[in-house]
Amino acid sequence: MNWDDSMPMVSIKDVHKAFGDLEVLKGVSMDIKKGEVVCIIGPSGSGKSTLIRCINALNDIQQGSILVEGQEVNDPHLNKLELRKKVGMVFQQYNLFPHKTALENVMMAPIRVLKQSKAEVEKTARALIKKVRLDGKEDSYPGELSGGQQQRVAIARSLAMNPDVMLFDEVTAALDPETVGEVLLTIKDLAEEGMTCILVTHEMNFAREVADHIYFTDRGVIVEHGSPTTFFDEAKDPRTKEFLSQIL
Amino acid sequence: MESFFDWFRILYDNTGINLPFLYDSYDRARMWNGFLMTIKLSVVALFFSVIIGIIGAWLQNSPLKWTRRIVNGYIQIFRNTPPLVQLYFFYFAIGALLPKVSNGYGGEVPILGGFAWAAISLSFFAGAFNVEIFRSGMEAVPKSMTEAAEALGFSRLQIYKDITLPLAFRVVLPALNNNLVNLVKTTTLAYAIAVPEMLYESNQIWSDNVNVTEMMIFLLLAYFFLVGVLVWGMNRWERSLKIPGFGT
Image (cartoon, rainbow over all chains, first blue to last red; front, top):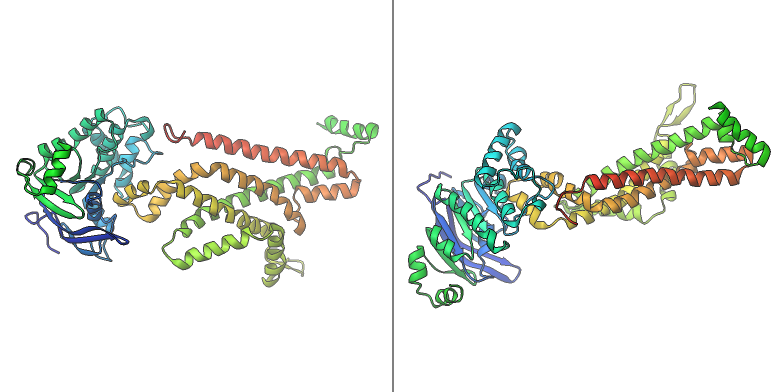
């Protein structure tokens, strides 16, 4: 499939996903262009996390289409490795490998998956750790780092694969309030460098500040979307208004 | 050294406590060879039983139904039958079916001797338990951890080798320790097919010298010492694998 970066980087069309009898996504569509930062917000259980997990095929979908740089994800013969080289993901619980140091965590995937040379990878990895402001912590094990520090290692680990899109699944939800800021700052840096980012988040102020586009989901559908200003100040749907009145 | 050995001859003359494997050079050589044979059989069976455990646990998670069934069948057969019966089965039933080879003196000998059958039989016996031990450890590794590796593009085998197995290994070491202790003690069954290990050689010595009591006390102490060395080594290994900040 021919794809060039004037087309949407991620194109989601009429996606349906059910876990058994529970329908979680009931026809979701959205387009994300290169360099865009998109925030998905909504009440818990509305399908936000499921949606972004579908983008890198951690969850499969029953119906619809997800194109990542023109590659169809809803395909039984999907080349998952190709997809995952393009899409990086950061999780709520960081999920660092506890038996590897911060530096080794960042280095592992490029060495094992991309078969890059160790010396080269180490150089990039050290630069990435510096970029997430963790220089000096290279040799610490995840268990010796705070939640915020672990999450920043996880971001560096994802970036080491040099992805085109980054997915952030409620990455600050498990953090102490005082470490949330440092993680958001790291993501903001990335966004400003032009990385395409899709975030599921409950940090409304952050979404307002960095997002190009905000989607509000409820019960498996997109209820409303728009730029941060129109979304936060001129929400039309009663469900959006109710949600915003509860959290703002 | 010679005077040390002679002291036991004097001990025998004066007290009747008969330890010919110390003062008699012929019995000494028999005992020593038996001791080495026990160690050799233990090391070979330990090694292969752990390998069987690691590979079996991997195959147990295979997407292929028949692979899983075969592994489970293997576990049931070897766990639910007595090891002595297994050993006889291998030595007498399977051994009889295999071709014989010339021994170079005009006679014919079985292609596999007692030692080989004991090593094979004990490896499969302990391996069946090891598969279950490793499986329990793999189940203790959070799914989110393997998901993170999947999102980085790791293949199933890479995830097992680099993440699941190293983490599972640390969890299962105490259980593995137990099984390996049992395995070392079970090597005495090789006596039944005339493998000249420590129990077999002791039997030879007490038949010649009629000193059953002394030999029994010695055997208990010798195995106590042997297993003690194994346990000590395993405990040291367990400590050296401890990850800073991980677990308790």
